[in-house]
Image (cartoon, rainbow, N blue to C red):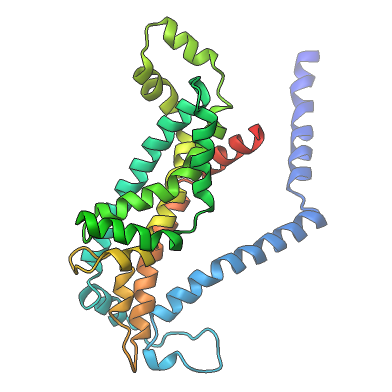
Length: 296
């Protein structure tokens, strides 16, 4: 008798529970409205950028802030790919950025392990010197690097940008990596050592998979700072075959007139990889930053 009644009594409770969960409260509605407004504010620059990339250059001047492109000027993107040399410059930027990101991630992993796991005399002093690099602005390094590269005959090469780009992003990368490594229990490495693992086995087989969130954070941040950089590239590069994607915008800038539509089209093309990378690694970035913050 009890077995026949008990199953019939449970469904109403579940349905009532679901109805209570679905019922929105005033606080939740206000929060959703607030989040929607914040999302629109965050997305507005991107909408504005795409909108202007489809306008004629003569339509940029007027009282209205946003204008509906009628008809959309897809020719701006065609001009960007032909006269702006977007494919060539895009490939150069991609090569330089990928090498810089991979090099900085590898160096920060090795240095982070050395500073957090190994005991050596000058570790604190060396770490402090590396952290000093975070307060040096990129503009202060232009003239010394230019003189140095010029004397060494290194100007107009891709590694002329890869080396200083890596040097600038490594301090922040090491800071993130050391903060994350401090949260990892040492017992994992001790077990690997007992099983016969060496130092490189520890780093690449044990530590590397665990530090994926921190590495993703480092890669995304370094990609954003390297991909859009222009001042250093404009100082060290003069060869047309080596210039990076920001130079495409300069192709449509004249002394008396500029092709604003093509410039906005190039800026839209520049923004797309950054947005994709950020969307792909948002979850990993959150884990990496949160782990370091909790430890601190």
